[in-house]
Length: 136
Image 1 (cartoon, rainbow, N blue to C red):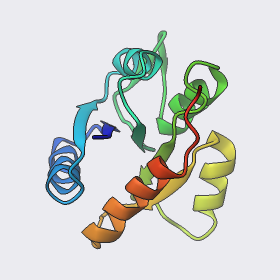
Image 2 (cartoon, rainbow, N blue to C red):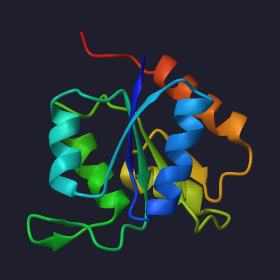
Image 3 (cartoon, rainbow, N blue to C red):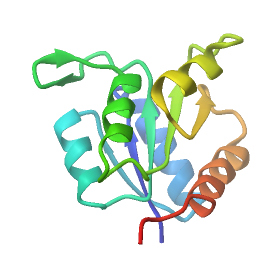
């Protein structure tokens, strides 16, 4: 069974995403907005995919305020975690934002909040996990 790490600073969104993924997707879910914890979980290979909120309001890493784009950049730059699929989640989905966020962060996909189509949401995550080569 695959495990999803949800990096989200809104407890309601975290609860909603967790419920959808466990009930509909049969996935295991971990959630945190603590950046050190995110890095540790990712580096230890405890998860198969990360759902990364773009606008994390309280997240700090090594003394610097960071958002989901920055954390994704860190993870993609580290050979230990570069293979890990990351899907950005954001409420600020203007035309063109998607490409900009993906290009800037190196993320593997993008989901807009609010999530209306639960089945599509789960399928996007399952497909991303399935089609992502795992390190040997």
